[in-house]
Length: 350
Image (cartoon, helix red, strand yellow):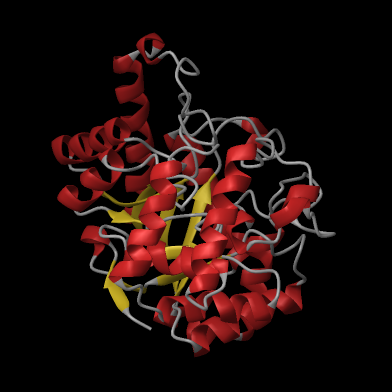
């Protein structure tokens, strides 16, 4: 397993990051522990979680994912320094998570303390803002006319960012978090945080995790350019497009217990006619090269210039092994050209 530097942090992380959002709903505690053990055996040292997990979120399951990681750490305290542990503070709109409050300096401090308690650890290596307070072009809100950017109060946004950075700074100085990152952000937001940190001697954002997969390439080229030139680690989440690029939904299938059979907070927005057409084309490319669709999709994300560490998830050990195996693959020029022909035909399928 190849290790890479997490932006400007200096931390060395595996090019695979183990996502955990199914733990507590689709996976039991023992299955979660088994996944961590296996990932470490394969050289994966990077774990990503969030206070809101598992997903789809609910008040009954809230916090279980972090608790499962906490019980693993309790059993394996000597392995804490073997992992780079990341968590996230939820944005506005989830009523059972800190009463649905948006992100602020005060809420950052509260969220960090509660996550550390559930995780049974003294510190987080990376603490991230799960989604932004202002309207976001993520979660299928990237279409024209969905967000009125001119309605934003720029000075208010800057003051809010500064307050958040101040809260993060308190946590860094207290030794509770080592580094800070973003999620579901834009080039404007990334650059605002960088400039405010520089001007005020506050913690610098070292990473951003956004959705990035063969069905969703809207971060090209602008977010990716910002990350490369500003030394920000780019961490793709949902590299299999919510499981769609595993091929499990081909020909109208919806296997029992899969994510598309569950109520989603933002809806099942990837389930479109164009998505299914693109999936079928990618499946044929994979088949012609003796790969699974999941392996092709993950290997493609991994090889893309600017990607640091890809966040994968699995509900079975078989899936986890197959997903990690994909990062040992190298796509030749013919395969890359075949993939490009498909995404030029379906650049924005959902």
